[in-house]
Length: 406
Image (tube, rainbow, N blue to C red):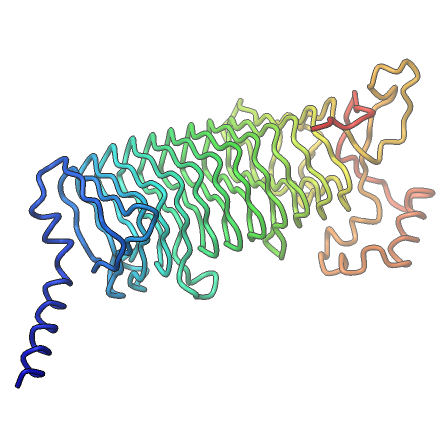
């Protein structure tokens, strides 16, 4: 009898403990701070008033029940910090997440560890909020079935900094403007950073490695990307920075290294009478330095370093004259001119032609044989005595003799 009574008391206490955190939130006055001691707390909580929830060194764990979102925020001026948040649901349709913010402003998500959550932090119609210092990883699914580490939807004027995404899917910025995205890192995901229909964002000093795509700007304009490092974007879709229907962009002082394609430019700039300015970037040791696709004219390339790429420039659309892009004052490691007056600028212009490499531009499968004796001989013979008119891809009137040191 005593054992039965003890068991009943234990079960009752567990049942009440499941709702203990939610009960504390419901009873707290607006603006209160709840500091959670180390331990495991039942999740799927809803915060509908201004509140601070502090876990101290991530030792307080808020654990979902595997169904839905672990923390739902539906109030302005909510702060969630120093917590471990885990075990969301698995439904993409519901956007099951570690933290969900919707129609709120001035919220702060700081230094949390979010694991085993389909989506990490989901922001919809969220403004003037800080997402800083969080570690986020998704569920152990195949890449395309994971959720996004951070997802912004119609969310403007936010600050996202020092977040580390590991084995999530994407970091997505959709229909969102005026955001500052800086000092984040991402590894083993799909899109390190993916923009669609956005404007006037600043993207700086981020580091992305071993993802399918570094940074891709689509249907966007008026954005500055500077000081970012993109490394090892490989595979058939691998690229460092992509511009698709993107206008009035500035790409400055970025490093793109060891990628299948360094820059991918597709119908950009899109808006008439606009330019994209691409300056001071280091595009080094990639399979392709720049890949032009579709009608991509009026981009301005100045002061960039092209070094160690298998091909510096590729154009897969033969009816477009990519010479209408402006190249001036770049460093090309295959420039063969002289600098008699030692002013650091080549005495003659740099020209980059497509010779026998047109074979694999028409049929990418042929690129498998790059470096083979047959292709080497074809390239040599084509340059020695072209059997067809070579195609001029780039003319740089003032090539630099030395690369910029960093």
